[in-house]
Amino acid sequence: MSFGSRPTAHRPRRQVMLLSSLVAIALTTATAAMIPSTAAALDLVVQAESFAAQSGAQVETTVDTGGGQNVGYLATGDWLRYDGVDLGPAGTLTVGARIASADTAGTGVVELRTGSVTGPVLAQFAITSTGGWQAWTTRTATAATHPTGQQTVFAVMRNTTGANFVNINWFSFATGATPSPSTSAATGWVDVDQAAWAAQLAAFRAMAMDPAPPNAVRVPEFNASCTYSHSKPDDPIVFPGLAGASHMHSFIGNRSTNANTTLASLLANPGTSCGPAQDLSAYWVPTLFERGVAVEPKAVIVYYGSRLADSAATVPFPLGFRMIAGTASLQTPTPAGSVNQFYCAGPGGEIGRSADGNWPRCAPGASLLFQLVFPDCWDGQHLDSPNHKSHLAYSYTGTCTGAYPVAIPSVSFVIAYPTPGSVDGFTLASGMASSMHGDFFNAWDNAALGHRVKNCIVQKAKCNTAGQF
Image (cartoon, rainbow, N blue to C red; front, side, top):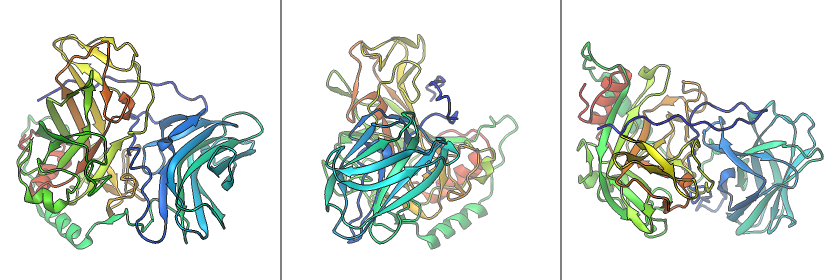
């Protein structure tokens, strides 16, 4: 099954910032952006783009470790508001800010204040040039005393020049240690069973490769061909065990998926809306609505491929691996030409836009589609992370290195909806078109996944749903 090609979209470049040429992909939902540990100690990461309100800020793609997005275009007087930030119990609090700056004047300060933009200062960070707008470093500060429990936190920008002076990727709050999304031992980090992972890798490396025929298409790719399964206001990655806590999601794949889903439950329930039958994974996206009526996907192709310079470095996912792509909190207009937008494919293509300009209208013979791309580099240590993104990165340079050395298949959802749209446009359960996001919970049979990775991705040969050339 083919849905056609995704059109190339472009966005203006900031004059002083070199942006990645890759599609801008965010990795976390709004509710996933702030997840405190359930342990006595606090270890919390708040993604900068998860603000509840802002003034003067713009969200953009980052090449920082972990990929995703940062908040930029920040000058004096600009602010970001974060609701429900759990500052934990009384005691010393270590606060971190992941920042980048090309401001050589070095006169800026980022203030974290509680309650309001003029409320008590929780922490502040002096901003000097880090060597570029995407040259990232972590600054820390210590608060000897602070309000306890959930607070509204404002990040307020101050400088003397009036020019943009800082980009921010995340803030973090911890008791007893300097916070770091890549080294935290908080409850939200799910360690991989290293013995099981080593055994899976050994079995994968021992697999014989089926030689591709001479006429094989030399594209590293296989797929799962899926249809819509069911809908629930559940999210077993973001809100595990909390039925009804999420906005409405449309589930694809394993038919048992709900708030209580675990790896064991997926493996124990072989019913799936995907082929092949060996893929018991769960996939889900926010439900699309047209004039208040749910529009469920008519087809979803989950592509597994490689964007690396050398696809032979790719290995399978470990069982129980989880990740999210997209940002439910991103509520910005998506007019024609924006990245990461819904589009039309097929005869006639796009024939117009909705009245608000944010949604395409498709010709009668065309399909409304969305393509969502997930990260493809893994830290090799964790099945999941507190924000469901910090154990991953995008391969912006075509290799997986540093803190994310393990090359995993590049997953992308291509979703087709049975509607051409209208001037009224659509809404997502998560809000505007820009809030589109997706979740993946791996429950592939190890052998079936391993053979496909070896034959199709490592060998760089295009395979079908059955894993055949």
